[in-house]
Every structure is written in structure tokens, then in C-alpha cells.
Amino acid sequence: MFSIGEFATTARVSVRVLRHYDALGLLPPAAVDPATGYRSCSAAQLGRLNRVLALKDLGLTLQQVRTVLDEEVGVQELHGMLRLRRAELAEQVAADAARLRAVEARLRTIEEEGTVGTQDVVVKDTEPVRVAELSAVAASFEPDEIGPVIQPLYGELHRRLAEAGIRPAGPGVSWYEHAGEHAEAVRVHAGVVVDAGQQARAGLEVTDLPAVRVATIVHHGPMDGVGATWQVLARWIEDSGHRPLGLGGEVYLDYCPEDPSNGVTELQIPVAPVSGGSPEGA
Image 1 (cartoon, helix red, strand yellow):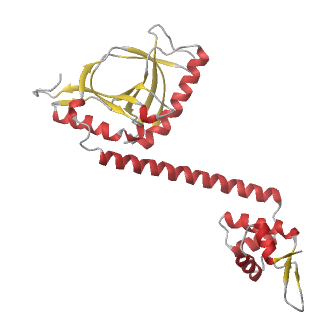
Image 2 (cartoon, one colour):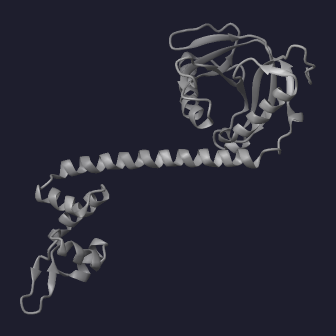
Image 3 (cartoon, rainbow, N blue to C red):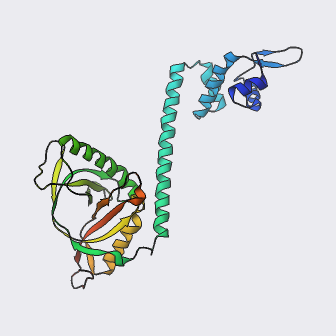
């Protein structure tokens, strides 16, 4: 038998908690000395205490915990409840982390206003290229909506290319289109430049991207901070006598998954001069 203090130390809880559980009838002492009132606990009670703590961690009130314990929930059922709660907590942590990244990216966008000049914008004609691609729909053009869609696409695309024995002939390229199914939905195309002779095959679509005139700007660093660079490009298009011909896309000049801060990405938006305007940089 253990004293209350010894039992608390063994179970890694406080004496105050044990006294509280005793008062609620959750964990009465194994024995009480009738002469002194001295209470003792048994190692056999550790199992019940572990269940009390586990159910409390599930979010149950102590009254609900007592009800569950009185119903003698089995080990397997308790394990199932804990696994479910673990999955819920992991999902919540992931969602909170995603929101934190979005807030940090928005703060960077605000902090970087004016630090990237429109003098860095270049207008050029792209070369026609053949790309192997996969596509999916994102809820919007927000970086925190695009990222979770495009990253798995590239992982799957490279897996299929390796399986087919196709080696990339150029950088990764992505482009975006209004999906049509929803006002803000965007179809995300994840592609890799391949040899001109490559043909489509099972599980792998091949697309020819035509030559087009684009306004471009180079973004340095992780893609969760790309919003500020897109805004610089948009401001230049508005101020320069051009009009956008679509949502544009990205060319991953130096993709650095191990250290995204070293990434180099060219942002592109197809443009045309506004009728009667005198575009700059054309």
C-alpha cells in the first residue's frame, strides 16, 4: 500500500488532484485507518486513475468520467476513444498551423509592400513547350488553398514520370484557370517540361503550351509569401497600359524543398496592351 503522497508521486499527479477525485467518488482510497483517518492507495488503483485521466483528456467532465467508469468501459473501447481523440487533436493542430502560416504570410505581404519595385517586371514572349501534367481544383487562388492542392499533384506527377521512365527536360511549371464550378474555384495545373516527342499515356496527360506574351517577375523565397510578389506584378500591369489575359502561372527556376527560403520562382501573367494605350516594357 502507498500513502497518498507516495501514490501521487508514482502516478505523476498532485495530492490535491487525488483528494478531489476522492471527494467526487472517482478514486476513493483503497483503505482508511479507522483510528487515524490515514488513507492508503493500492498499485491496483493505477489502472482506474489512468482511465480517469484518459477520459478527462478526451474532454469529458469529471461527472461524465464517473458515469463511463461505472459502466466499466473495456480497454479496447477506451483505446478506440483515445485514438479518435488523438486524430481530432492532430487535425486541429494542423488546421491551427495552417492558419498561423496564412497569418504570417499576410503579415509578410504587408511588411514587404514597396520593397519589391515594379522595375523588376519584365515583359517577354515565352517559347512553346510540351509538359506532362496533372490537375485538380482549389477552392480559391489564396496561397493557403493552392498549396495543399499543388504539392500532392507534383508528388504524384514525379512518381508517374519515374514509373514511365520519363526524365524532365526542363523546370516545373504551373498555371491556373477559373474552374467554372464555383465563382472562386481555380483549376490548378502542375506540369513538368518534357521532350517534344513525348506522348500522353495511361495516367499521364501531355499538353502543349503555346508561345505567349507574359509580364514576369521573379519571387525569391518560400511560396507561402508569394502574395506580395503577385501584387507587385498586378500593380505593374494596371499601371503600364496592359490587361491580363488569365490568372497566369509559375516557373520553378530553383525548387528547394529542403530549404524553401532559397527557392526562385518566376511568376507569369499573359498580357496584351490596352487598346489605345502605350505599354511600357513591350
